[in-house]
Length: 194
Image 1 (cartoon, rainbow, N blue to C red):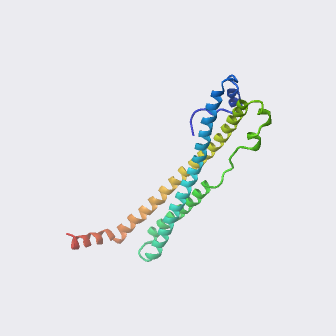
Image 2: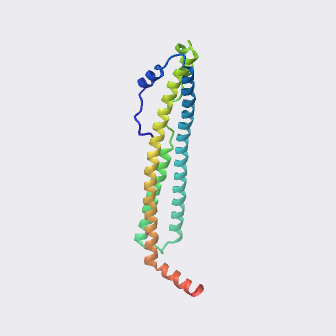
Image 3: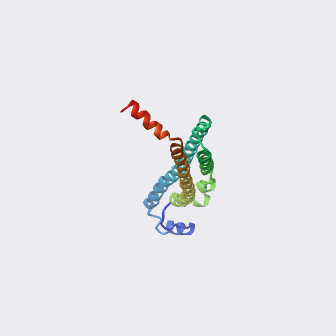
């Protein structure tokens, strides 16, 4: 999710061949950092999935609360207030669906047998490690792209969730104004507390 220009495969190959064969420590450093980046990219995709499921669960729980509130308060809501709550339920249903969609399994590039046992790289351990660094680059790019798509989807569904809660707040405010519940609460506080 970097704003830096990305390399393509040919540029990666050129860079991996740009230093002498006797500089094994460069290959080792690239390999160890690539290993770290593969683990980090994989964890990032898993974190996005976890966040998606958390949002879906939160939206589902809120839908349940709103449905039970509607069922318990029949006759208390006017049509406008009920419509606001129903609209909030519809938006939250859309949020839950979007969150589950964001967590759907994504086709990601992973190491193939040929990438780990590349016969034309058996001439030297350094050559094999350079090739594996190239493979790591592909895996990292694929995971970064998947994480970016998931993050954008999560950002979008969080925005829709805000709209749902604005609808619920508007329904609550409208209920307070039309049912004078606030006035009744004030009278109770005045009699019992003050």
